[in-house]
Image (cartoon, rainbow, N blue to C red; front, top):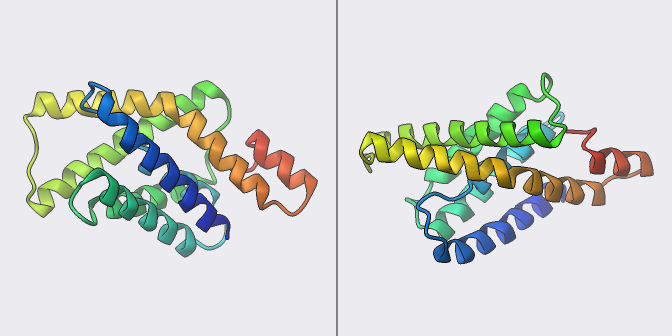
Length: 176
C-alpha cells in the first residue's frame, strides 16, 4: 500500500507539473520521475521488486503525461530506482543542501541514461550544446524541487508507519 500511495502522489505531482510547465518559457523541466524513483529505491528495505514496479509505474505515467516514447521514462525510472537501492546503505539524505545536491546529481544521471536510451531506440539526440544545456538546467531545477518532493514522499511514508517513533523518524528523514 505504501508504494501504491507513492505512485499516486507521483502521479499527482506529474500531472500538476505537466499542466503548469506549459506556461513556463523553459525547455527543461524538473525530473520528478527520477526523484520519486530514487526515493523508492532508497526506501526499499528488503524487497526491491515492489519498489522497481512502483518506479516502472511512475515512469510509464510520466511517459503518458509528457509525451515521450512509451517505455522510455519507465526503463529510466527502474534503472534510477536500482541506483538508489545500490547506494541506500552508504548514503543518508539529510539536510537541505545535501538534498539539493543529491537531487541535481540524480537528475543528471537520469538525463544521461535517457540520452543512451534515446540513441538505442533511434529517436536521436539534439545538438550537443543544446543537449547539455537542457541537462544542466533540468539538473538545477530538479535540485531546487528535490527537497519538496522528498518531504512529500516522507510524509506519505509517515502515514504508513506503525509506531510513533517510526512516524517521527520518517518525517525527520532519519529513515531513508
